[in-house]
Image (cartoon, rainbow, N blue to C red):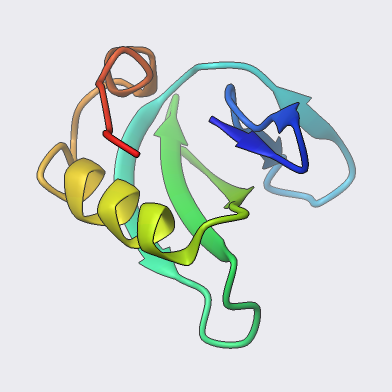
Length: 90
């Protein structure tokens, strides 16, 4: 997956104190939602070691963003690394 020709996976996460950005595949997916204000973005909520992290992905194609969200919504409570191996068609 790419946004403006730049890979957007693995996701970028903010630490719980919002001080550091992490870019890696870790944790368990707890939620995914479309951003109501930025129409090309979705949020991922991930948990690791009892802490919550927020991640975001941006997309060039709104239809693909919707398919991506629909696809990973059925994979809640699974490891992000496993979700990263899923195929979502263009």
